[in-house]
Amino acid sequence: MTTHSRTIAQLAQGLRRKEFSSVELTKLFLARIQASQPVLNSFISVTAEHALQAAQAADRDLASGRGGPLAGVPIAHKDIFCTTGVKTSCGSRMLDNFVSPYDATVVAKLKTAGAVMLGKTNMDEFAMGSSNETSYYGPVRNPWNPNLVPGGSSGGSAAAVAARLAPAATATDTGGSIRQPAALCGVTGLKPTYGRVSRYGMIAFASSLDQGGVVTTTAEDAALILREMAGFDPNDSTSVDVPVPDYVAGLNAPLAGLKIGLLKEFFEKGLDPEVEKCIRAALSVYGTLGATVREVSLPNLPLSVPAYYVVAPAECSSNLARFDGVRFGHRCEQPRDLMDLYKRSRGEGFGAEVKRRIMTGTYVLSAGYYDAYYLKAQKVRQLIANDFARAFKEVDVLIGPTTPTPAFAIGAKTSDPITMYLNDIYTIGANLAGLPAMSIPCGFVQGLPVGLQIVSPQFGEERMLNVAHLYQRETDWHARVPESFK
Amino acid sequence: MALTREQIENIAHLARLELKQPEIPVYQSSLSSILDFVGELDRADTASVAPMAHPLPGLAQRLRPDAATEKDRHEQYQANAPQVAAGLYLVPKVIE
Image (cartoon, rainbow over all chains, first blue to last red; front, top):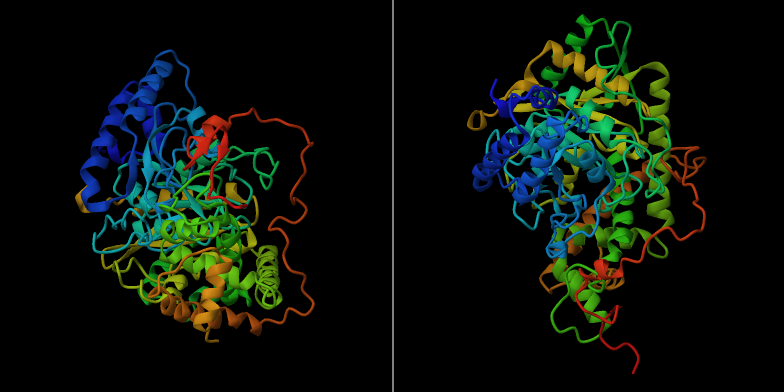
């Protein structure tokens, strides 16, 4: 197998066995990134100098038998995570000039584990988008077909891993932003339980929904990375003080007796019949592994997209109030007065979709509308969470498609925001209920990858990764690489 | 629900966003359709439901001791500010 197609587990082993050095690996991936940029545009910043220094340090550690579990392994970070001394733009003109004075906890933890940062991946502006077309730095293209979107908002991370420009990339998921691009790019995407991974230094979009995670090529790699990323952080008031299990240790537990719930609402109108065939075929693989499948209904789930498009914009309008042109970020030229400074700095710094969400949020929180929209949405959100809780009394995991269709063309859905929002119809429920969920490749439709979604009860990552890993032991969809990037 | 031009201008003012004239009808149309779309929530019977306050019941926000733990790093933080003098952020004159 070519070195760039190896998993993190294999790369970490190769480094310890001195098959290659971290500097060699880092140069290999940096060259692949550079060559791909004109086509894919999956990176906003490439941090070659930082990377080579870190790789040299990792090689010294490895030579002396020290170094963390990821010592010398190159990875990429979504440009939503703050990185000391490196531009952290969040895909926005607003932060085009922002050089972070500190590391996000996720970045610091992966650095401590020995990972080498290659650069910062492209993303929808402030993580608001499902196609990576809202980035100030231009759209990312899908490695399977550059006329198509990679999904979003973590489109740069998913495209980079799919094209083997990095063996893993951090990502974030507020309504599907890890799972949807992972599905559309044919890679593995993991969104942990709300509060499992620290949000400190992860630029906030909707704080009750945002969760950091990772895009990898395999569930085993996702387990390896999550083991390092997860854990309590006093700097995040919603970080949970629950011990981090060894996600890798449980990967091969047998699935005999596993009860899988098939989400009835996911197989109703809108699902591409070819995608459905892939999902049903995956279920039969689980059948051969000893799992049983039963249909479960979550009657309030169809309201998840409307509930999300009240709650998320409301929280976004509040979170993004901090961008005022005073302390950091874009400031307009020659402000007449303070109001002009605020309005023009924000009007110029934010793109069209971010403004749309801020205004939607401002409206639903404004006097006279708060009860009708925001409070109502939070009640529906509770109903959806109750539906999931009821389902998990009967089954161990829920399985269904990640997206209704494979990747779509660039520009196809930009004219109507609702059409774009409906891309996340299957993924938003897990965010509203704070549940862990992942997407793994389960087939192809007309040469484009299809994602299988697995949802678990809160803090059920161990079982979920086990369920994903055993499928990947039986199939090779996850090992497919787009032709131009082999 | 159709929002008027004035309503869009008022929302933009509350959000401290300057909109260019051609942007206003675009937001008028898209915000109106978003509000129609989220209006589907009315279908749900929520009479006896408490609004969700936190995704993790029982593990909700904790408090920390009220103690200073951070070092003063204002110079580092202010390196990102558009305009600073003597450790202060500068803005246009507010009070005559």
